[in-house]
Image 1 (cartoon, rainbow, N blue to C red):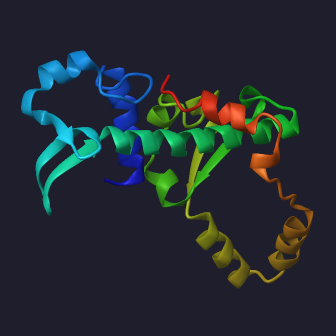
Image 2: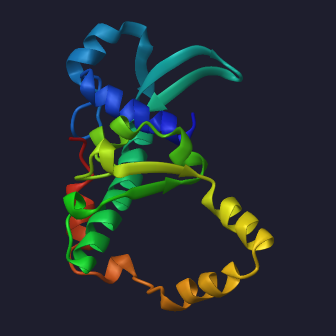
Length: 177
């Protein structure tokens, strides 16, 4: 399953009552799911498809816990960086999502599962492979290299785990909305 597919699962799982806020499968769902949910080596797992390339496709509660950890780290990073800037998500004119993950991500699901906390779909712009685009521009217009160097020279490195409130924001974002 790709990363954007996991984001879809978190959102749909929570929306439809498969997942509780803590990422565990809801007991009433498990009771209805029959053989689709079974005990695994490290907890319960849900069969998503019976005939994947190498057999059934499963997602376990451990998988969901790891997804929630990744989601919490991203959301806490966003919250922390906005705090460093002294701004709120609603004040951001545009949030650019780049790369393959951003290209295939459902904005509604990313917001709905808490990956992009406080943002609205209207603020988010998917921009594709920006590193390739930048390299292409630099190859075709050498005068842009000076502008790129200025951008590099003015960037500030922020170590998130040393920022006040990052750990609290991480813990707050471990749950599904």
